[in-house]
Image 1: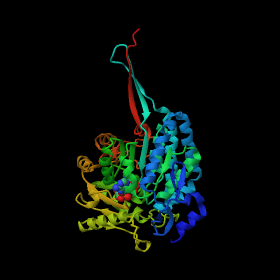
Image 2 (image 1 turned 180 degrees about the horizontal axis):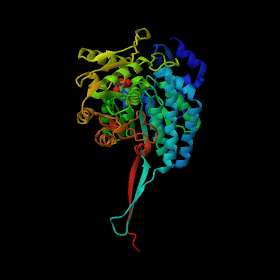
Image 3 (image 1 turned 30 degrees about the vertical axis):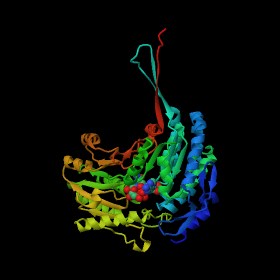
Image 4 (image 1 turned 45 degrees about the horizontal axis):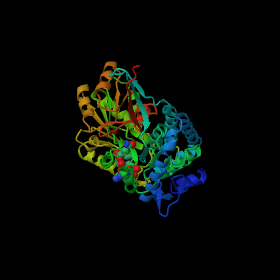
Length: 492
Ligand code: NAD
């Protein structure tokens, strides 16, 4: 596998996609210092990128502030045209972007291709939604007056993005901010800067004016601190762990900026014994193993009703055994490496803990030879609520299956988490489906489906899974302020 990523990048990608230069105020900055980017499957260095410093971030903030008046005054249709061109350029460079994602993030190439289409979809969607930032007219409570609510862009926005969806998490935030009329500064995860910088090249080519979209790579704390503290940043959007989200929220309190947070998940996946077993297993497999399990929507606790428990475990084990582990560039791969060693280490700790506490461990693939970032798709059955895997997010290809007896019981267990991002329910009983869709306390609920994301839906969680929403008209509102205007004394 050594050399595979570099060979693909050199053979396929535009030269300027690989320079590692940051985009600040319309200039491509190579930087005096550089950080390396590695292929998580092999540890091979595949590129190096600029290490931007706090002083560069201050320059970027000033540039963004300087271009805010012009960008907000552009007609929404014109901003939409530019966003649409950016989406088209992403699609016409889909293969190059997908290879970049696979080489630095590790996910299978087919999933990386899907991410590019998914990511471009947010730009297209917000291109149109920007034209629908309607205000309101309120029936007046005061004689002879007219009451209006108008929507205004909030100002300069900042995005701190994760490594699991290194392209789509940028466009989901930037599409909304730019459509609303806000310039945006992006700080991608240090593990996955190349795809972010390639997307920035295309943003420039699409006609986004200088300073309106900027991408700075470097140390997360050094670059995030000015974004969090500076009064000129009016909106901050973050996707990542709840721990870091809390730190950013606390820091942002000093300047009372708008904050939206997409944080961890710990999704319950409920399977009742009235379901079609085959469909439920396929749904659980997709919800567990997409993005090699490194997905905040991943099914973390698969609760199966006792009547079909044994059959479900057998089918799920057989399907897990069919998964192929390998380099994301290999067309047969279903499960790639973990992007960060810390994620693989956490998976192994959860498996060990579950085994010690009596879970059955089924791990059909031996992957030690592949390297330490690889975790074999592992099935833990007979999991109990006390085990680590049932109490904390896994973020890797480890499936935990827990038996349950009644609807009342499983609802309490499913809702008993500080996380509240996504939940899944599989049942053929319509009344039960409706009942649970009401009673389950999560921001997003899939009933008899494992696939429900996309640009039109409000993506976000309850409780410590986050604040605010991305995508949908609610996503646009994260970058806008309301202005209420009262016209008085209108009686002739
Ligand atoms: P993380 O929260 O540390 O990293 C996410 C982003 O935050 C990256 O851009 C990182 O550079 C930045 N960051 C890290 N520390 C920071 C700090 N102190 N100040 C400012 N920015 C900072 O996530 P991680 O450690 O890479 O992954 C750990 C866990 O986070 C995962 O196991 C998973 O639970 C969660 N996670 C969730 C998502 C999601 O989609 N919601 C994405 C990535 C990670």
